[in-house]
Amino acid sequence: MTVKEILSRKGTSVISTTPERSIKHAIATLVGQGVGALLVMNEAEEVVGIITERDILRASASTFDNLGGLTVGDLMSRDVIIGCEDDTIGYVEQIMTENRIRHLPIYSGKRLAGIISIGDVVKAAAHQAAGEVKHLTSYITDKYPA
Image (cartoon, rainbow, N blue to C red; front, side, top):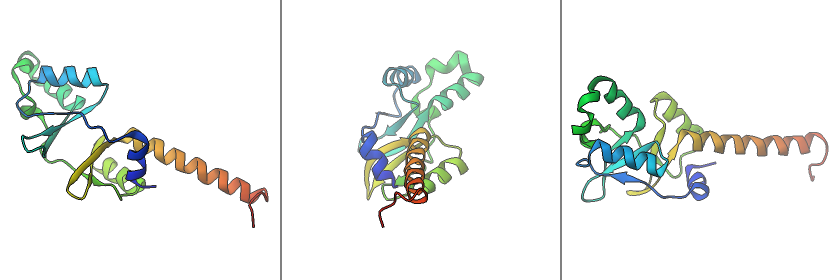
């Protein structure tokens, strides 16, 4: 199964913000949209970073009193790891695990195609495994058409 198949089920909607927005606005967007990460886009609609709930929580541990004065650009991760639509779920699962990330922007060529979470990947892997189990069970119980 590929990432493209995950996006076809999940959808390609991406919630984003800009580096100039306040952290308060980012928190409101995360909570209001029920997402764990926002892609950070510049004026040319290019991804320049990502900000997650964890980024904000870590910052609040050290600068809680000043959190309201910070911008998305102050806390966002600038080195964004990306995936491609043709990547397999096994490959992106490995990339996300090795880099300890929960969200992965997906590109189709040079165009942003969507974003997936580790939950999306786990769900797709479970769906794929269930199909394989069903197929093998049919084969073993001689229900496989030959």
